[in-house]
Image: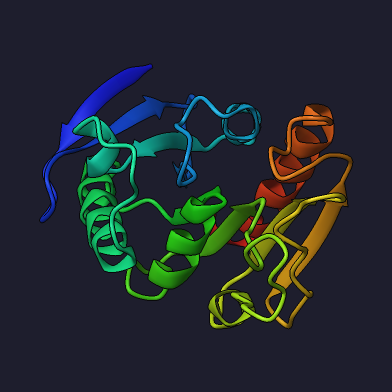
Length: 202
């Protein structure tokens, strides 16, 4: 494992790199608004990525690197993410990039997938709407993604569950928004999906 700092328009971000032997793609994973890259579902997805022959980069947004708790505005998160993606693309010799993350990080991955030329998107605990406010849906962010997308959602997630679409599948596992009740299912689902979507590209 290697940690690197990467300059962005909004201060330095940090990436924790977990490389796979002969990795054939790169999976970038972003954290949620209130937590860090140590989240258990992110750890499970990292293990799954490495087992599938994928380099994994756990990305800390600049506001967390700076020690701030409050998340930055969406435009800043997206700009920082794309700066990190560009650096990692150079570092890994233009390998195919999969964008992903949990909760807020999943939204960032969706919003930036086209601009960052991601070949696929992984969403862990996508926050379909604020708790108790289903009328404030974020489904449009997910529907706008035009590459293969996997959503792994807890069956009792207070942030709701997105609907499947033409480019995205939704897999529901036991648990809440923390997505930590059935980590083996998270691991298995992510591993199988990565192997499937990356097979035509490698």
